[in-house]
Image 1 (tube, rainbow, N blue to C red):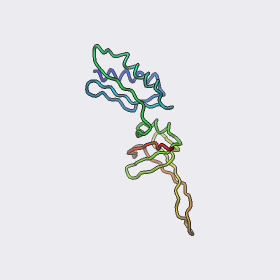
Image 2: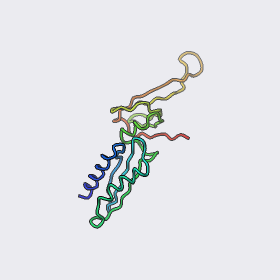
Image 3: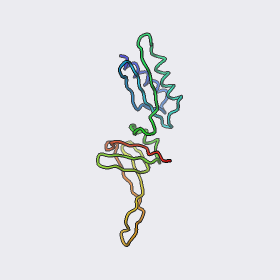
Image 4: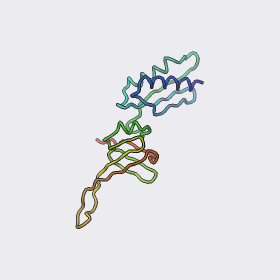
Length: 153
């Protein structure tokens, strides 16, 4: 009952803010509500406050004691939602698949797959020395075990 009420309030808040989307939602022992959101243009503190108020102001603490934590998906958190890939176009990702691990620039994110591109030095086909070769891979979402944005300084 409590979880479905919170879920309904959360869904209503996200309908009001279509630029935000849910990454994780749980209610742990002692009614500890934890919500992680992301946004097509990132997440501001005000966005977390909006979601928090939409839930907290519609629950009665006299009825049910609870704690509420609303946070944004961290920069080092793995990408979970397809919309997270689209917002990270042209950034370098480390992608672990069911059979491989690749690092490259995310150049495309469709509804079914992503495309990574990277450059690698390989021996020349003829003669001595090496040549830079551009590589690319299309990876279906179903084959991605984990994908993270690589933070470069």
